[in-house]
Length: 345
Image (cartoon, rainbow, N blue to C red; front, side, top):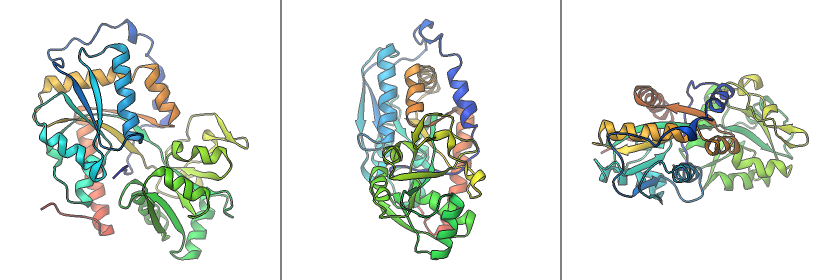
């Protein structure tokens, strides 16, 4: 999977964005992190995706902030292990058990991948450190489409009785999961057309080769600026807070929520997560948790969130563990319903 997602009850986008904007000014006045454990050799950030993708950007912005503020005393390098739809990175993490110098960056693909394909790791082989952000998802159509609202799109899909083409990145991945959730909530049926990436899906929609997609804001914004696609709704409990006008006087905050548009699911987001190998110590996990807490206070981190129209999703410890447990259980039930569930041998 290049991206994975699930519906979950998260904090409101606007409220979390306001929380981020508060309290960052004192960051540079704080002393360097003082912990019982510190990295003793170069740190490797292991990315469960190819270069240039969202997870790669996630790891690299964290790396750049750490280096700029000199938050660790050793070098931090980024390596991409995106093979097997990202499972290469998690298998690598399994092989680094007990090593706190290997930090793995992923999404909820860490716990969803073992549900839909045979992999060489289990969730117990990795230790969750933090969830730092959540990607938003928008229902888009192309500029030539006759339907002007999300409700119109659903009715058009209903009339086509399965012939309506929904483009997405990969099969049994984020966009496919969201497409199935829309079907489940509305009673319509789509023909899901998988492509290799969100960027490729954006091009296909702009050319009207598919009828709709569910790309993240950053993946379709170029085509929106050019007037080739238009957003119909965002799968969030509140509208996006960015007031920038993108095309023809319409901007992010003008996009109605799915609830306002009268379709479901009401909310669908993808968390961006950080992991250590299993058998690392509490002190080592605490070091990385506190370092990432420092990172998220910086102007650079806030700008990265804003630039990708992402929301803050800071979860650690028992809160994150419970989120993972519930999300895995919910998706297990859904995947069983879809016929996707694979039992690990």
